[in-house]
Length: 316
Ligand code: ATP
Image 1 (tube, rainbow, N blue to C red):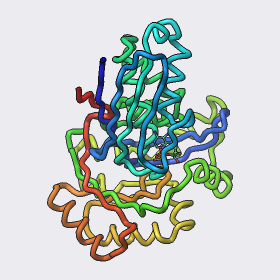
Image 2 (image 1 turned 180 degrees about the vertical axis):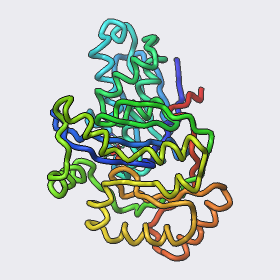
Image 3 (image 1 turned 90 degrees about the horizontal axis):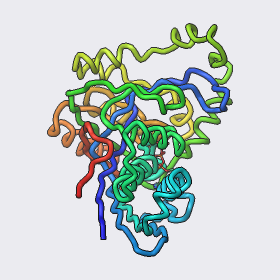
Image 4 (image 1 turned 90 degrees about the vertical axis):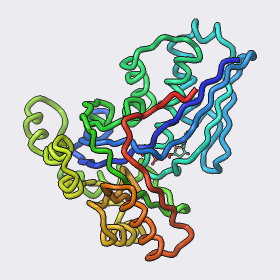
């Protein structure tokens, strides 16, 4: 029986700016996304019987049709019914390492791995562009999770421009295990609090205004110039304005991390994970130990990760 094992990388946001509302009710965003080495492992095994079985032993991850992996299976079955019907079923096992509801796109990474793996298992012959387009139907972060590396993400996050980045920095990630933040809640609250500053995203006349609002240029230049110090200085995430006041514990964590060294500190995505960039593994490990000693709370989980070029890696 055919078996594929894939590694699905988490992402952090080096930059996240909210530009305005879109006609489809999503936010118009400008983000710079970066894959990191913290990853889930998915194993896909062909079954003779035409059933889909999902296994995951993480208590916060559903194993019913609400799991993004099941949604990926359903999407491929709907789009390619003849090819999929000729195959048997599939057993998918998720070995979860990426914390859930963390702003690290764990669910999206799993959906990305499922699309890539099922394409191979079922011999669908889809190109990367076709996989990216299918991924966008499952979630805004799924295309980036397939592509991996470093990229500017615009639109609702699904339109990607890769950035060449050979500067594989380290990122110390920190998250209180018992605290998860709902992504829809963060965006809704941001709209309630800051919606009057949005640029309307309706027609060409507002395009120039929207472009003037984008401030990601210095970060893109810093990455292109491999200027680690400038990357640290230009970290930016608009969603901090909602999450940090609502969760003082996260604000405190950010302050502690920022004052423990490193190039710069930021909350990732909709949080509540906070990260600090460093240039070396030794500096990352020292920073992790310092944060652990300054916040001796067993609920605080810390990881040393490194930037990676790959979103989904086929292991066998
Ligand atoms: P993002 O950064 O894309 O907003 P996140 O890291 O904040 O995502 P996820 O870990 O992807 O959040 O999980 C959000 C919710 O999605 C969870 O509460 C969980 O119920 C649901 N979910 C569905 N499928 C998965 C999956 N494969 N892994 C984790 N969570 C999943």
